[in-house]
Image (cartoon, rainbow, N blue to C red; front, side, top):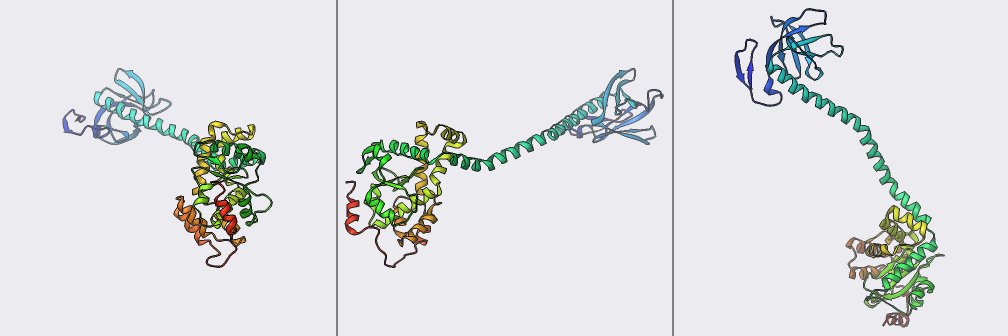
Length: 366
């Protein structure tokens, strides 16, 4: 872009860019301090963000912000500009280069001002949205816990039976001395499993361990008292203390209501609201919930400390169950925690079952 001086002499060529394009651009204009005053000839110098008005002797008279300039139209001297909202002070220009420069840079500046105003207006809204989203995320767990508590024990037991029935309908599953799905509702649990479980002194509320065979984890805790203990785990076990450890883990999960939390987390807030209202878990959600419960049974360590306390109170070791869980691919950190929490060690202890009962349990699902 070629730059012209007041005298019209070409002085230099500048790179073409937003502001550099117009650096040191000058022109002659007519300035009025008010509509009643006579116009005076001034030199107008284009700056980075302002127009500088100078006398013909180059004495500065004022600086006008480019962003604040408004066009008032045209008169016989050219385009009329004003920086004054009251339109008192005006400048008339007929230099095309100067007018183009003012319009280009003023347009950019005004757009930037509009964007800044928009950001200022949006900032409170965006902040409110951030706070609102944060509040929802923080409140999500307490709300889910509240809704979980609104579902009564009878409904949770009904959900547990429905999930167990669904799982046992698979081709890889079969009951062991339980009268099918009806037995899931009425059985207190397998007698030998109850004998082991009684050693743990679970208190007033105890689980109902039913012996079944299926492809899956060694024990499947459900949101009610019903627990499916896998006969495959009994086959893999070398001693009844391994089964005692599984029952301790299941009892701890029941006491802490961890499997109910798994269900509510899987269903989400809306699904949990529907469960609380209808007291029925939709069949379409069974697979998702079962998958989450199976994963939690092997990977969730939240009940391990409580299970260790039950085993310690029963004077039973936790090392055996850690070895069994290792066979099922439980996380290494969980295995190490159960091994480190073994309070019995090499000490002598009374077995969870005598040899005869242990052999009967091993043969219970042949």
